[in-house]
Amino acid sequence: MANLTLDDICVRFGGLQALTDVSFSLTEGEVVGLIGPNGAGKTTVFNVITGVYKASSGKVDYDGSTITGLRPYQVLSMGIARTFQNIRLFQNMTALENCMVAQHSRSKVGVIGAVLRSSAQRREEEVIAEKSQKALDFMGLGDKTDEVASNLPYGHQRRLEIARALASEPQTILLDEPAAGLNPAESVELMEYIGHITDLGINVLMVEHDMKVVMGICSRIVVLDHGVMIAEGLPGEIRKNPTVIEAYLGQ
Amino acid sequence: MEFFIQQLINGITLGAVYALIALGYTMVYGIIQLINFAHGEFFAAGGYMGVILISYLAAQGLHPYACLGISLVLSMGYCALLAMAVEQLAYKPLRQASRLAALLSALGMSIFLQNGLMLTQGVYDKPYPTEITAGGFEWGLISVSYMQIFIVGLTAVLLVALNILVFKTRIGRAMRATSQDKVMAALVGINSNRVIATTFAIGAALAAAAGIMVGLYYGSVNYSMGFVPGIKAFAAAVLGGIGNITGALIGGLIIGMVEIFAAGYISGEYKDVFAFVILIGVLYFRPTGIMGENVDDTRV
Image (cartoon, rainbow over all chains, first blue to last red; front, side, top):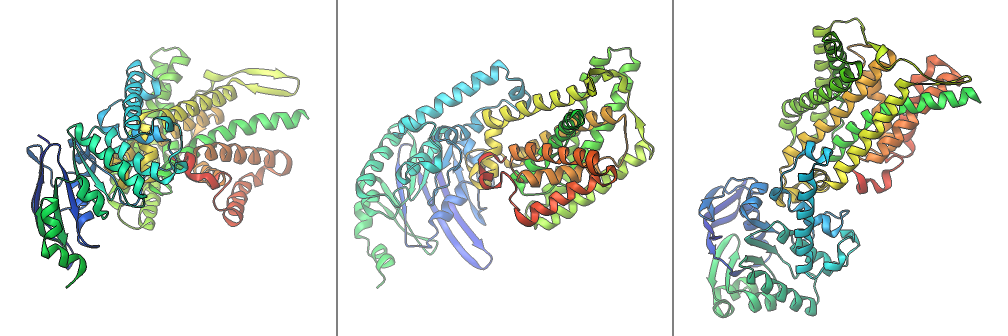
């Protein structure tokens, strides 16, 4: 279950070939790193998986069904959550509300029920709040519940993004540069958190530039350059791969 | 002094009506940055549906209060559906187009709906059975009609309900999230099309309630009744800070007061001018409106 497979994904924007025949997969509880120089198409891969962009050809399978062409909210309800490179929290909501929003697709009371404050609605709200609090606790933000997101320090905002993703009860999380802007101590902390996430059986696909983080926690690494996969393998192999070194450093 | 207090009471009543209409403008703007110029037509449609239902139910021998209550709920529901249909037809296909395109579509929809009302209901005023809420209190020269109490009371109830909906429920969170960042909202599992439709529905339901209030208050409805109050409520929304719910309330009350006081102390003929003087003044000196600075805090 929760196996994510990309099959010959191509993305073209007008004349620009952003991704060419990208194929790889992610299995349960795995942490896969997606690396490559700037503009390699890493974030495009995320956008294709989550339905923000449409693939020009190829398909994405998840959990035994094809998810290409689904809208972002449908992809999330399938169990794939994501975070952003530049923080995209709902800045004027509290930490708890940010997580509660992510429970949207896991809850169902509508306008009428909400206005009438039916007992079902109140019960559902309680459950949502409880689950959201758990997500905050999990990411070490248990005491920041009522803090407005924009008032949190940068490192906490990063963690809140992950907490929000977790609050949607995903089986797969896509992390876009989770260590960006973190100091070394915070990066180490982040690696521990990601370790806890995989312990829950959630698999992680991560774009990251910090090689210490990538090499430290990824079981496998996929390397993109100019939209083409140039390597895939274990961290040790990738580190020594001449094509990868060339892509990063030039000849 | 009595005159002043009397005008204050009348101003609050009218302001409550403007506030209810202004909420629809502001909520829709908050979520898709569109000035829905067809919004006044939901107000008119609500007024008409109200009188049709009240007359029908009264003919069935129902208690007047029951007639009013049932008609209110059904009219609000009818306008909610109407607004969702309008959104689906006239705005959704233009979601990716320029804002001007949607604005023009809104103007077109306004003309369409207004003429539709004229063709089906006729050009003459339709009288409201005002005896339902006749009577009131009097203290010397000051009088407060049951109608005014009904208007202000119902507005208060609707505002409290809206506040709970927006700030304490899953739909409200989805609305706030969508207004802040549509892409991210979709990525946390929110179907933004549905949220937008819901926002239109809620705004139109509030306008429908206002339409019935105005029908009862002035004793009749007319097919073109949506235009002027619609524009004034728009002025109220801008004055309060468009996109801001509290702002719409404050703006509505101010416009209502100004209009009544201008009519009472200056000239009844110029009362409409003042709402627009305020609109122009706000756009000129403070385009973000009264609550504009923290527009993000409570916008929907």
